[in-house]
Amino acid sequence: MLNTFQAKVRLFVAVVLLGGIAPSYASEPLPVVASFSILADMVKQVGGPHVAVTSLVGPNSDAHVFDPTPADAKRLAQAKLVVVNGLGFEGWMNRLIKSSGYKGPVLTASKGVKTIPMAKSDHDHGHNHSHAAPDPHAWQNLMNARQYVENIKVALSAAMPAQTADFQARAAAYLKQIDALEKSTQAKIAAVPMERRRVITSHDAFGYFARAYKVTFYPLQGLSTGSEPSAADVVRIVNEIKKNKVTAIFAENISDPRVLERVAKDTGAKIGGTLFADALSEPGTDADTYLKMFERNVSTIVSGISVSP
Image 1 (cartoon, rainbow, N blue to C red):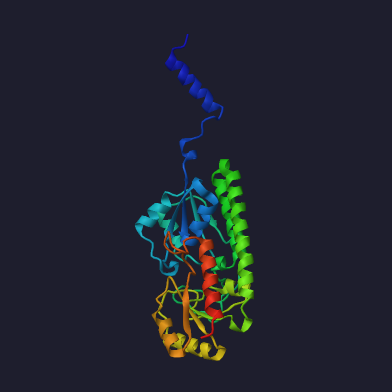
Image 2 (image 1 turned 180 degrees about the vertical axis):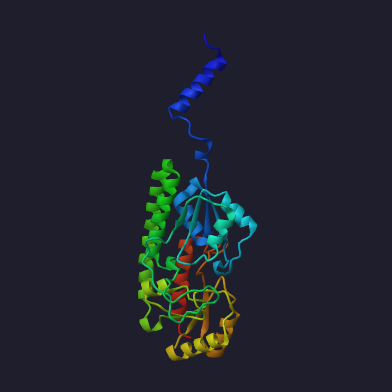
């Protein structure tokens, strides 16, 4: 007759063999590293309690000039999934992955997005962009964000198959929110006369927004913020303001606003507020999620271009 201890051991082995006990890590959140704060939020929205997300480039920080540290390599090495934007946005990521020794899956969240080319007026700013390369800021069109969410859902389901149904449900709910915001965005901008839909921004991050919502952007700098605006950049923007009767200038949360403030003073255009292009705001503030950021940008732009100077 089996003693109590032997009986317990046999019962444990039988349950394990039947698949009743999953490995201990299966119930723990999946460690995910996202390249920057906007992607990190999207992963959190789809993954919910099943993921523990770290953003390499944090809120109000500029991915264009990000310089990874050994601590970032360590975070990457401990991840089970890495999520990047791709399209040349994270020029430092391949080096970081190599130095970290990470061998796991890397999701390019923009995969499948219909890209647009960089503006021909864009300049290199040290990132060796070619004019044939795509604009990486695809999240500035809400319909592209739908593709990001689908890609994230698939990647998380592959990493945690047991949670697939929950990922699908969370993604579906998130997509409904995106669609509702798309509808309200189109309505708000449609109410502004076309001739007033002209704005100045710090750098060329709103190409997708411009095409999707029919707003013309005149960026002070190109795709990257890796260098200070030149005197020629400033002269060009002043001329654009005068030629096109632009009345609103918008700073960005990741850029120094002083040059634009000087341009506003010299031209009589007004600073219409701060836009969030490549990074969310700090947690607990009004642009701390992707959807809140997008909605705030729309409201700021519409408010800025609707009021006469």
